[in-house]
Image (cartoon, rainbow, N blue to C red; front, top):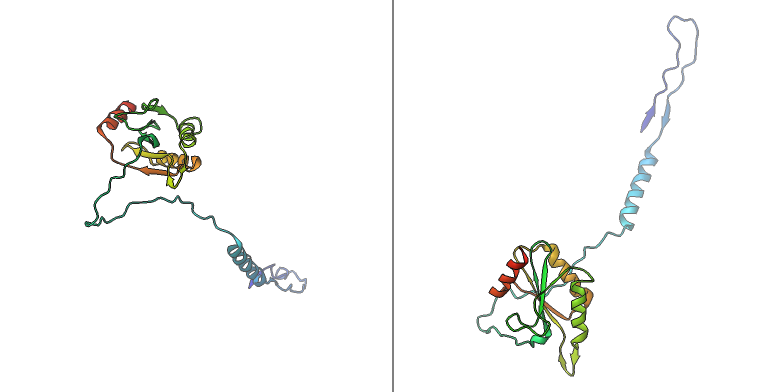
Length: 188
């Protein structure tokens, strides 16, 4: 309980005047403390906390079964697009294989954003049919970050995959010697 002291109200000693003593005024703050705790509890229970956002990624198995052989999956090179990420937000892409590129599929510089990489991905998503008969088809994007590319750049490319609704994409760290030469050229 809190007290408010206002002084004893008596006159000076020896002044000869007799004054009555004033009683101390008390302010009871118990109700205020109770109200504060009730408000804190109310806001804690009714506030919706922001939920962390995450992206679903299909990761390879940690353990390889020695009984199972590694299966090489053959993919039509007309369905693949490879994105190579370099240093300082630089990016190159090519369609098909680097050794034998498709027509108009030579390595091309691009930028992040709607007028760069997104525009190229959307062209290919529209041009390659998603489902043909009972077989699934569609664009396959292979993302190859270099050692000098940043995490933010990888997230930007993954965002482009989600925006463009690319059905299949993979992050690969197997960079061929030809691609290494491309990365060195890009990082100059």
